[in-house]
Image 1 (spheres, rainbow, N blue to C red):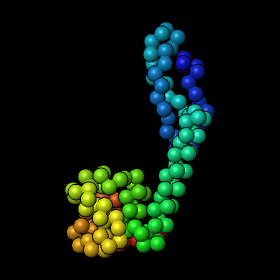
Image 2: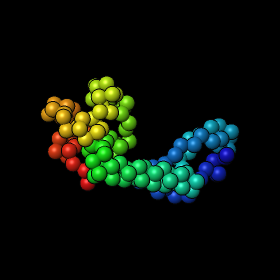
Image 3: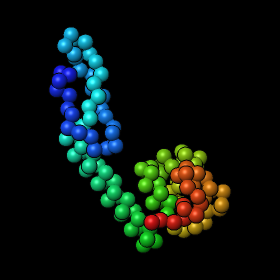
Image 4: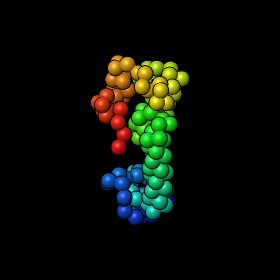
Length: 130
């Protein structure tokens, strides 16, 4: 790809651009920012659609009482139990237990505060879902 061939199809995601390193007229590699590329935009749309569907599924399970509100917030921040465990400083098995309503309802205020601080929300917001 040459400098003139860098895709400029228009960005859809808030002005983000992609870096490409391509040869210029002299054969030296230069950095060129692309405003977008249709195949990449399509892939990003599919990804975010999938994320939204997954989150809707988790929210439905929370409403049915199969999962705790913690599961919703964890998924909303695109985390899994391992990552969340690292952030709160707990073993993964304990975080997994807290993803179930019974385990979540048994949490003390200190544990709830730790989880809430990871998501930068209040304890009251942690206990709720939209």
